[in-house]
Image 1 (spheres, rainbow, N blue to C red):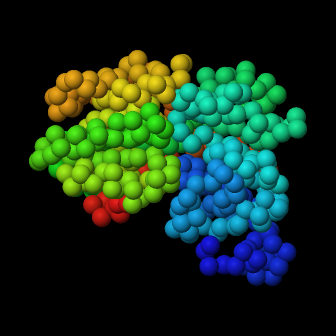
Image 2 (tube, helix red, strand yellow):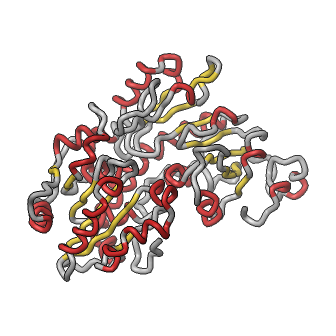
Image 3 (cartoon, rainbow, N blue to C red):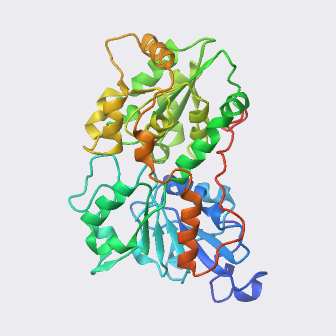
Length: 400
């Protein structure tokens, strides 16, 4: 909690006489896990400075709520409501980057993707629906739950409409605000490198892993230690970004214990909340798997080397499938150092990934804000919806 008693927050029956600003539209940010929270953090600035709006946060109860979310929300400084209260209150809008709990809310819900595109690149474990959009979470008692479902690309939107024709009128194509921010940061790459302490003659290798047993961390953990060993020295700096769910599922202590040898060799383990985007902008190459970070890297033209075992998770026709057809795959039989050298020497790669990540480059902030204020039934603020560069990765950036 923020220090304000839950019984005195906006929306409770005893709250009105305590409020300094009254009559605000009430918006709820639904955060079941840190991945959803970090994606919503890109969207909330589009409306939170509006003096007509009050934003609150909540974490749904249930088996899909992950450890560490409460701490993450407390650090954000947001007004946090317990789920049993938030699910009984009426809100003018709920923002979600997951389907968890949205059918229990008294609010029109805007659902955003929490990775590249709006349909997962991983093979779906669900028998119905499409990857990332199981039918039982989208349709309840014949009712389509979300007021709007945002997709970054028209192809994903069309696939959604074919799979859920009853929800076709709720589908919105609005681009990818995270990718737009990364693109806006690229002209400042030297500034990102300098702020992180990466000298001009040193190469930054970023290692990225999503979650799942076939991810780089899940299926080839030793690769991180081996890369840390062979890239040790003045020529290289290695930074590692792990999916937030990896931290939540295994715990900080265990993750650092598993990577102890690599940490001793000098890798920098990035925090899950933020930092991977700055490292990605500053990097000279990325070694990763089928996760969104690797896809974003390829979309930015970064040289990419893929973990071979992760192909087992790749869904045919997905963004990751396109990535596998265009990027290099690590060869376990060859020198790791040699493959990294070749990757960097080859320089930036022009691929079709960027055009497949978003069909509206640079437009996500404006289109998302337009949809948000449509649901709120309010005129948009006069100021433009800006696309801002991602935060710098400073030398003092806290590590987990």
